[in-house]
Image 1 (cartoon, rainbow, N blue to C red):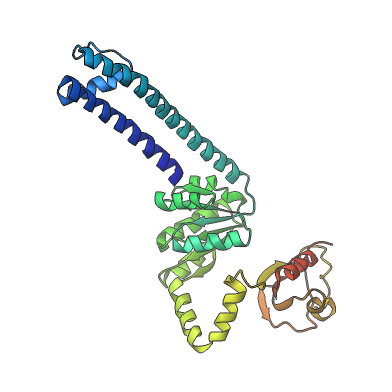
Image 2 (cartoon, rainbow, N blue to C red):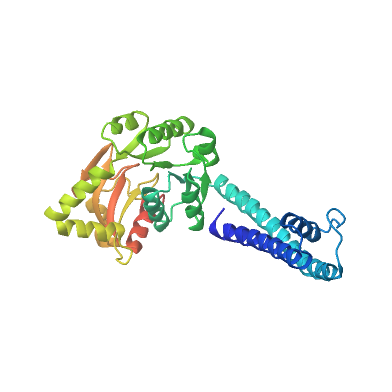
Length: 330
């Protein structure tokens, strides 16, 4: 339930309570009855179920009841109808979200929508990647819904929750919880449901890295190690850090670093880096090539491209899109 639903629900409840209190106050001032009798008479008046249960009304009381029925019953009907509509909207929104999640393919699953998970999701959104969030905290879950993200409220280490997130069709999962044990269980469960899924996990403790890799994590990242290295680099190589910030995290600059896969029947297969002339033709610089399990930085001009090679390239959005077309089947 997002903040809009919560606000409407609380508003309707406040209106209903306020109407009952005002109605009770009127009986108290006019009829001088005990508080409980005034409250009971107000409720049975607004619900139109009768008056003989407590006391008989005098003329002033009858006039007051007439106005209370005319004004109050209409307001009660409006409040109740709005509450019914509200719950119907919640059920409809939940069903629509479940349908969208079921249709996802080759998507990412982000486990945890804390500060780390939020950064991951914002980056995915910026790069137009489809993803779904699994979050057990209702507050963080509502925050994800308010941002317009697909989200599931539940424990990501439970198989049924992962299945609800279409884990069998997902290409990757990010374990962004602050608890290393929970991340390990999630990685183990995800690998059991989808052997081909790529797992990236956060690890707070150094000893957790080996365990996470044993259960199938492709990459394990320690925020403290990364932060320490980055702070040291900011002192020793400040321009390098500034350059990396520009190409990785600054949308105002039209310069990006991208990873692209050479697909079957691509025109690049069998060509050398020099013969392909990528930099001169489309303005993209090839920084490294991942080939046969090895990452080759600053590749030589005579290096041959092959099927399944992954290119790490630097260029503008327009030039990188041209490279993506080039590596696909011709």
